[in-house]
Image 1 (tube, rainbow, N blue to C red):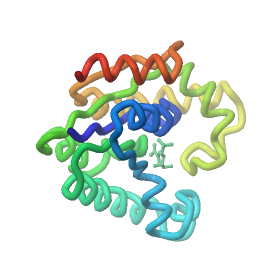
Image 2 (spheres, rainbow, N blue to C red):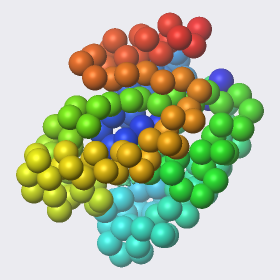
Image 3 (cartoon, rainbow, N blue to C red):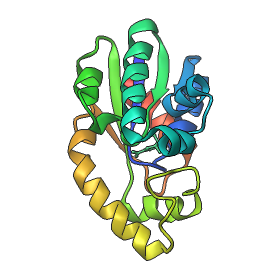
Image 4 (cartoon, helix red, strand yellow):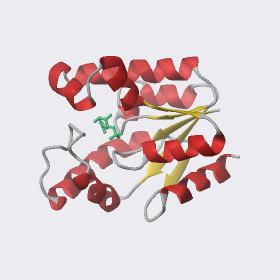
Length: 173
Ligand code: S3P
């Protein structure tokens, strides 16, 4: 089985994916880390020097490449991955893929993001918690329609990463 974790920035995709991989003895791939490795640049540097359109092309390419060439692994994608091109259709229709939406509320996400914004080019410029909550609220509204196509939805608010990983294992197996 291939498990694809989707969700907004700071919903816990990478850390929950790592935990889940250990529990299931699966490999774990983080799509942003993979792009950074292939490009030899950080995501912020790719945005800055090559632009977002280039980043989105690489993201779509490596998403499909990973799913086509691997089995039994966990893939955490970027917050924007499901929302561009045919990526979400591809994830949903790919054989052997289960997509999981890690669903966080605007307040959970924006509280985390104000502390972890520096590596994230789309929000690095936002100064206050209030402005972050306003941005996340609008952005999530635009994206939720893509996230809601996932086969499984798990609420992450007020749960530990361990609880979330256990909930996913319980739901899937
Ligand atoms: C993005 C999310 C980031 C990264 C890039 C763009 C987005 O990944 O792919 O900064 O469009 O939401 P995380 O969700 O892992 O922060």
